[in-house]
Length: 293
Image (tube, rainbow, N blue to C red):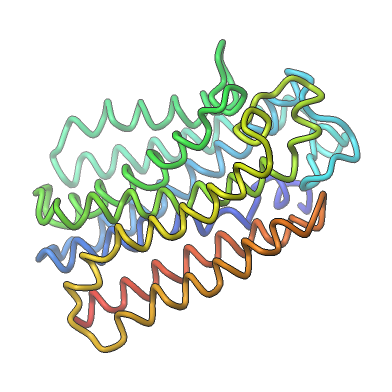
């Protein structure tokens, strides 16, 4: 099971959890009480991300973009631990489970436009690494992360938890972009680590296109921009503890940013997970403040 667990990339899964958790809390703050939809959103997001991670491993292998002994996390297909056919089946199977969860969400909510929205999410889960123009190979992975790990999960979860009503968009939309920016920092660490390998095989991530120095600066600025975008949320909580959340996030963020400039190769692997956990911690604490407000 170890190769499969590694292929799920557990260190990155907090990214999916963070957006949905904050979406549930924002929905509750706006008067929403449909927590079943929130749980289904959480399950859908996790399955979709795992399917995308499986697909990334399979399609990068098929395209010859991975090599044995790479600096990043061990790739089961490339190393021969998992057959390509088994990985493709796991990708499609996991994506199919996500679609089933999505159908249940549609039936419970009665919002039929969720069907095309779900199709788009499923397609982009694969288009990140597959198709004639894979997003992650052309410097568009960061934008995709902001949209599909920030805007989509936060806004849709809040919408469904509010009984399929748009409430408090002036607070929810900026918060969703903030989550997307923090989530994109996880990808920045990943691409920062793999820049040399990616350049060698012609994979044009933002770290390859703009260079490590530029992306390290983007990493730093994204954290501060996210805190600015979340400011309306903390103002709505009216709590003495509200300022502590951005201060804690930025304190940890600065530590991780400094480490980003001093580590190389596989030494960056823990930093990737810690960046994801910092996002999840910020989401959880913000959500607790919203619930207590």
